[in-house]
Length: 152
Image 1 (spheres, rainbow, N blue to C red):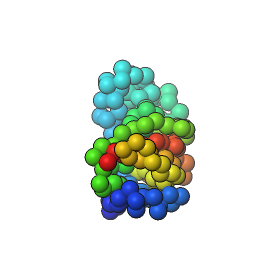
Image 2 (spheres, helix red, strand yellow; image 1 turned 90 degrees about the horizontal axis):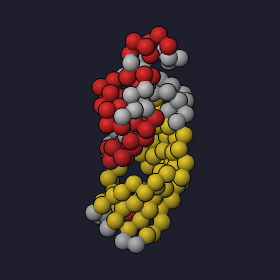
Image 3 (cartoon, one colour; image 1 turned 30 degrees about the horizontal axis):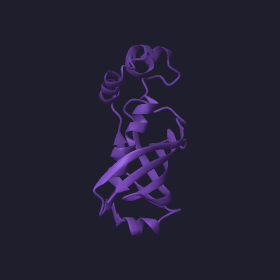
Image 4 (spheres, helix red, strand yellow; image 1 turned 180 degrees about the vertical axis):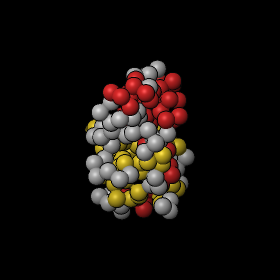
């Protein structure tokens, strides 16, 4: 997908619309293992391939929900470039649900719908309705209302 490049003023006109859909990104077992190491969350359903094959309802290891969540800044950056700003930050989440499993090796993409753009001191706060889809599945793996800020 082509990256959307726009100013804050142009973004304001996109409120209520889907602004971008990312390219597909593979979530490998190596990425899952690295996330487990970084967070000290080594639950077998994420890192033990043999046990997951035997005992997991998914037949394989699955990514941590928080790993999927942590991909949002990367995915947003791949899809949208907000010009005329000097700094972007995560501000938080109003709503977050992990709605389906993400098996190791599966590919995901994100859809970003802009719900609001509000002025703040030295910039704007944006509310994004984000859906992370798994390739080949109707049900998403994550839905969130995500707040980001851009400073000018």
